[in-house]
Length: 363
Image (tube, rainbow, N blue to C red):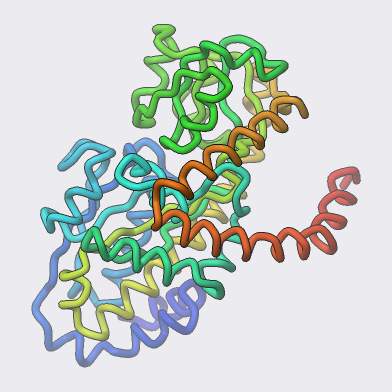
C-alpha cells in the first residue's frame, strides 16, 4: 500500500482501518484468499448495490490485494431472496441484503433492519453499536450459520408510488402494492392492501402493466433510476415502515471464524466504511433527484394523519401477534423498544427543535 492509499484509508476508515492496514507483514505471508458475495440488488442501483463494491474494494486495499471478494448482483449466482440460503449453506461466503426480506423465515429478521415506526438511522446505529442490537441479532443469526455487519442505511424512505391518490385509510382497500418485506405487508393487509414482495428490478414493469397499483422502493435517487415516476404520478411520504433501514453484510460463520485476526479486522473495518458511505451518498444525491422528479410533474404529498394513525394502530396489533408466536422476536423487540423510548425522548429536544427551525428558513 503506497502512502497515498494509506492516507485515504485512514481518512475514511478510522482507527479500525489503521489497525487492519498496519498488519501488512502478517498478511503478506498468506496466500490470496477469494470470497464470493451475493447481493439482493441490481447493478443499476449504484447506491444500494454499490455499497457491496465499496466493501470489497476496501478489503482488497487493506489486504494489499491478498483478500479479494467478488460481488455478484441479483440473479447472477442466486436470486435476490436466495442470498440467506446461499450463505447459510456455505454456497457463498457472504451476502449483502435487507434483513427484513427474510421475515418469512422468522419475524426476528426484520428487527435487524427496520420495522414500522421503528428507529431512524442514527438511533439504529446507537442500538447496534452501544445497545444490545448487534449482540442480540448475531445470537439469532447464529441459528442460520451467519454473523452480521452493518452494510449501509438509506435513512427514512419515501412512502411509495401510487397510480391513484390515497387520502384516507379506506383508499388502501384492494390496492395491489409492492412492499419491501413481509412485516409491512402484514400491517397494510389490515388496511386491505394486497401485498407483493417483488425485487427492485421488476417493479417498473409490474406498475406499467398495471399488475400493481402502488409500489415503494427507497427514495428519490433510486426511484428515479428505476423510472417509477414515468408510470405512477403520485409520490407519498414518509415510509413509516422504514424510518432507518439497515442493510447488512451476512457472512458464513465458519468462513468468518476461519479468517486470521488480521482479516477479521479488515472485514469489520471495511464494513464500517461501506456502512457510513451509503447513508452519506443517499443524503447527498436525494435532494437533486427530488427536484428533478417535481420538475417532471410528480405529485409529492404527505400521508394524511388518518393514514398514519391507522397504520400505527395496525402495526401495534401485528407486533403483539409476533410477540405471541415468536420467542426470538419477543426478546429482541422488547429490547429494541426499551432503547427507542429513550432515543425518542432525547430526539424531541435538540435535534427536533433544530430541524424544525431550519426547515422553515431560507438559506
